[in-house]
Image (tube, rainbow, N blue to C red; front, side, top):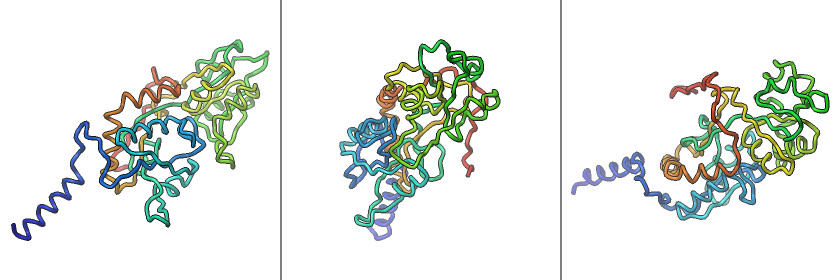
Length: 293
């Protein structure tokens, strides 16, 4: 075999290694991979926490089981700078990135290379059961009364439903809460556990997974009403994320998501995400083009 022929085989091998899809059922670690190294927030239920109680913890454990690898975590608050301080940051002691996969990132993002989405949700409305009123849509808040008084509404600053509530003339009934307080250990679910359950507000409007999880965990019976009236444009889907250069790892994660869809859906069902049945078809979800920035 000539030198040119040998180099041709080497180049072909490299090309095949970067472009060939994984075969079905052939879920194996990448060469040299010793662990599933997850970037996560240690105080962010229902997504993740240091006790491994979140749905992303459970899905990461399933990934580790399928690959036959232990799961390791690098924790950092899920806020601005999360990617820069986790999956894109190198540990000066080891020369390795701190972690290799970020869970529950938006399906369309430029910061990381997303996999196919593995869950979706929408905003929801939560109120205490047995208060003498039922809320099916946001407009029902207008006429509902608690002890003859208008309902007290809790929402987070810059919430998706803010404009709709203001348009309904409910400005005087709204109490705003800070989404990201200074203490990263304080979770958004406090609007249910600390405010709604204790009677400080009468209805809370917030992100569906947080609404469903904390309502289900409350000792006070709650009703969770999906705000499917908002339309398809407000159904957001989430993926796993890798560094752009980690193409084989991203492909392996996509294979995992495809082959384990039923198990992943079963995990998600345990966290009481609001139903997406009968979502208003309008406004339509914007279709992202390949040349979008």
